[in-house]
Image (cartoon, rainbow, N blue to C red):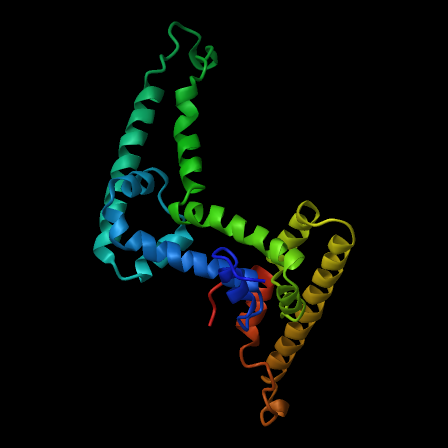
Length: 249
């Protein structure tokens, strides 16, 4: 099958010798998003308006810092903080216009009804904590690439062979592929895909688990002179299998 633009990254990921090709896809998208954000684009008005509005999650803020463009990050964070200050000042003002109860009654006097603005500061902070420019930029492309996995499995015999000979998937992406499969495939093809996916996941999970077991056994003085076999990098590979796109090396 002739490669098209949207199939190339998926094929590349499945030809990479890693524990989860979907993690590889995500890592590539994440790297591209970080480089785009910290490139000249951070000076573009539409980009800055969006980063000011949604900000960044802690994970991607750390990656932006590691990018070394400290000036660019400083400018983006400064205007994002300006936006937060302005928004919260406005919300606090709305909440403070609430009128206190008048008259007697002491401690047991009837309290005034709570205006919507009185709780909007918390709602704003919660919403801000769930938003990230990098996550948003990755999401739509990532969803298209996941759909492309099923498209290639259904239409490209060479890809299907690569899929079946892969090292399986991390637990989160195994779940994602399993959940998506009924909407993307049907009939015998769906049944075969799920059977292969289940086998790939468990066989390779057990393989890495066994490598990790030997890694821990090597700390026993009785195994000090024994070969490491395939266990030297078992810890980061196990972290990948369990947690998905993690960066441990």
